Amino acid sequence: MKKLFWLTITICLLGSCKKAIEDKKADIVLDAMTNGQWYVSSFIEGGSDLTTSFAPYVFQFYRDGKVSGFTSTSEEKGTWAGDPDALTIQSQFPTASDPVKKLNALWKILDSSWDYVKAETTVDGQNKQLQLKKK
Image: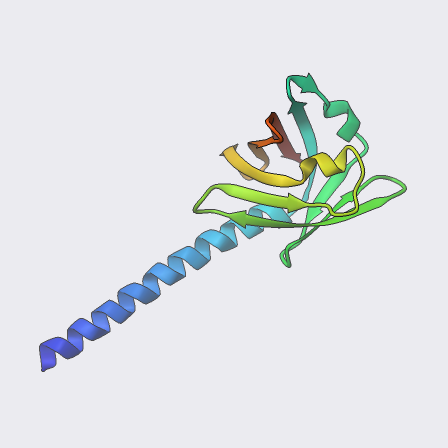
């Protein structure tokens, strides 16, 4: 009976540790994305370089899943969700116009650090490549 008790305690503690590790991974992603503003350093759509169309924008990601794209005169509001296990980030700007609406997709993260993210997606058969950098 004593062995069963300790086995049950051990299993519960291991489950708690796994959850704590998953929570910490998610927290690290949140910290990286929400501390500072980001700009589009490269945007390629179907082989065309559209980076300059994003030049007026900086993006602020918030811990509550919201994101804003700011220019000196306007703000585009959207949502984002990161999945550290799948290495993806989903972004949606429901009322945005070009170029910001081109960010509406599920992006596969190819490479990242504290100050940059490289990602790609395919929308309507067209490959898009995105690079974000912190200001």
